[in-house]
Length: 265
Image 1 (cartoon, rainbow, N blue to C red):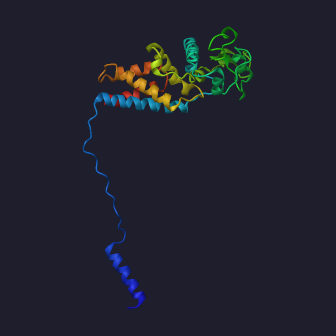
Image 2: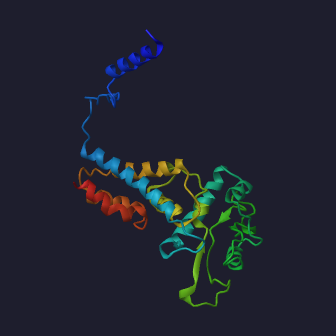
Image 3: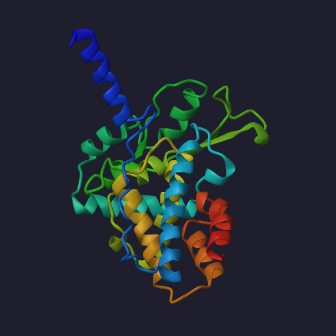
């Protein structure tokens, strides 16, 4: 048999065995028959965790510049809380004043209360803003030279002569509080509520970012708090408590209505 003829016969045989256009179908792995039914309380807890994570993602898209929006401006109560927590954190010896300065990536102000002037001198520019610190009156204290929260109002031209409506507010409260490495168990219940509010505002209102560990820890705290309320299917009460823990002004509040729609189905 001539060689070209043998080749032709081989092609015809292969075509007969595997019809044109045929594809090999890989069968999907069978679904396990051991699926466990999820209780309504488990579903609620799981969804709340998802809402918390989604709120954090949305918060990163809404980070503010130096000027804070009205909802991000810190209250005197929040400032006092953070200053107190910084002192308590300094007592633990977790970091030195020099290590804190490196973490903030900003210098201490020449004067212990120089934040206000620093903001105004750098208004409208990308200049580095120094931070307030515990000065001479704290020389013998462990929190000497640790940061204190600064807050000020300023005009775009660096003065304070513009109208009240045109003035902007700046504060480094969120960057400073983000340094405090306390776990949820380190706070009293009242302190934990305040800390949760500030954690929710850190990414929403500043250039600081929560570490994955902190985000997971506070998400778990909120979930566990909700789970321990004794509420079975009262989703309205659940979302009210979650929103209360986060200050009622963060991403969770804007998502609360959406989450409740899913939970009530």
